[in-house]
Image 1 (spheres, helix red, strand yellow):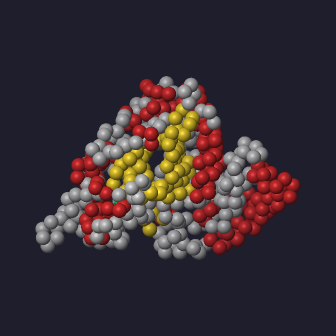
Image 2 (cartoon, protein in one colour):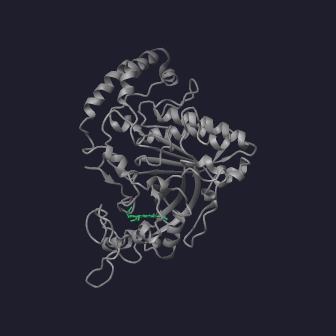
Image 3 (tube, rainbow, N blue to C red):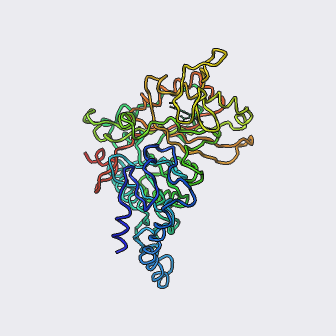
Length: 459
Ligand code: HEM
């Protein structure tokens, strides 16, 4: 009975999420940088009723099962047998993102509060067969975890870290690096979009923290849920693949602001204002690989390319700049992200507008001017980053910055021309350092019964 009502409550939504209550429709249209989960954060208007219903339903299902099993076999027995996700008290916990779909989750999904990026290298000898088996196992696991279920696999297999939490908008996204195609003997099916990125003069790249055969992006609004997924996926790799590098990031916690807002980065800027939005007519064409390409690359239809750059911010230098100078560097106001040409955060930049001195109000070397599609032959990408902070470096400066992730249908028409231009004259360059880089082809979403990458690995 509770299962039926739960299903009814949790019909999939247009943005691939389902939830008992308050995620607004505007959220999908606002794109991943905007937190439109609730208007009043702490006590969303409809949460109380839903929570109550969930608590009542939950007590009958997971709650009662927990009590019985707890008495019989302790928490281990509960963890091993529970199959229903617990009924989370808030929409943050109860929001579920669909694993299956045309596109993989974690691309247009609203930015989550916690993220892990992990690259794996296939074991020598794993080959195409080993890669296929791994992707099958990983996909099944990701589907379970995203539904808020345990990792499965019998008693003691699940670590129990996420036991009390709902799905919490967990997403798991898989990508293939250039070297994956050599390891699996599939070079003839490798798209040109995976050609190596050109070097940029400002690169200070650490090869050990760059590229990789496989890439996994994990996002969740709960840190324990994200960590749980990370461990489970690492363990599931078994002997087939080993971790090459891992990065941990974060964004603002949903509901932390009085109203829905685009997130800020660690320099304090509103970051993500001028992202392409899923509602726009050319969004799909810019972000997802279309059908009708060469037959050898049909496996990538509905997929995308992720460029991942670990960009350290030289915060000690940045924070010495007066706010007015900081705003000139970006071309937008710090307080609300409005362009220096005037208006509010949603006003388009007027790149031609000049001040009393005849100079452009948005300086010639401002980051937002140089990177704008208008100045790059329409080149556009969906930026969906996480911030990171890994403590202090030997010189005492913060090891902190942006795990910059951008999504596009073709990286050589998205990231590459824009980064080339930024490399030549971005006012932000003296304050940042690109330390690691990865380029991954992210297959389209798996249909029910299918695993991610099956169309490549089994064709
Ligand atoms: C730590 C490094 C970076 C920081 C702090 C940063 C920050 C910002 C900020 C504050 C904005 C203005 C608000 C917005 O529209 O989001 C912006 C815009 C933008 N940035 Fe960056 N950015 C960084 C790196 C990059 C890189 C590496 C690229 C691509 C190669 C890039 C591409 C863009 C684009 C395309 C826009 C939108 C321009 C427009 O259409 O108005 N950014 N960035």
